[in-house]
Length: 455
Image (cartoon, rainbow, N blue to C red; front, side, top):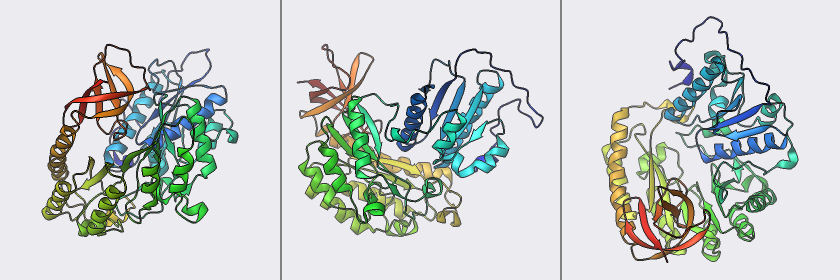
């Protein structure tokens, strides 16, 4: 679905010039940032917030007080559902502007980068559109100066005890289904010094866990150091005092630098956790997706990972419904999951994206069938997850307390990342400070959650 072709304009909009109610306020500007999409977008929003705050501008993330007069929508343009959500959010904000609740609506992020010229015509009520790498231009529009000395400074939108840490931008891979390089450009690594400085700044704010993110984590350093430098970066990060957990997300399996695992095994504050998107397992699908790896190589890599870091948690994501996927391919995936017993699995249904090489193929699998295949595969993984969680009953773990809900505390082990993995549910009459670590004995286990008591 091309957003420029969607019929999502708010009721009452017409081709004639619209008269807007003027917001009546004597107060200074307040900017609300709405973030859609992935954790990389969240970091971009946090950076924007930090810059605005440093310029003396009042700013908030997802402001519930509704006392702002300017909105910046940071959009996602990855797949159809994300694009539709982004367009709907923009239209909601434009409707508020029309009704006099907002003065300005600005749009940035991946959808804006990818479809700006179409959206300019489709939603002319937006005051300005910005791409993914146009922060200085956006700040200028908001009457703020880009402060280069603030590199790494962010206004955190996460709880203060954990944060995402982006180590590079863009991607040089050529996966046939992926539009990210179209929106984010080629791979650009931050220097080790920049990453360490940012990590130290986060620790000063109270952060105890950083989740390393990039479009392609293992490619880190090739552009500026001419070799893969993630193992070296991990060693330096591990030495940052006060950093208790370092977690790895989005590691590409092809040409995986195994030295990462040696550092992980040696350093206590690097979580025994690896997020490694595989996308598929049958060789014909891997070839069509241009993943540069075979099923046998993936199987050998997983065995190697587990041998080097015993007890490691492996998370992956898969895609169902890619053009040409057969029932045999689906059965291959189910068989692979049964054999490998991965700890965490997420599934996307294929989205036919313009200007990707897969777009030249015929999107021949109906949406309902894609969803049915995804559900079928997840049912296999659900049973595996339940069995693996049952094995944790009676064991004790170091647990980080994330929040308190309905009188119960919710935390995570080193084997669980934020929002996508297991939570540990804890009943405790004693107060457990958010962000603290406690030792928990697991007493019950479910498909995707654990229950335990503080030891």
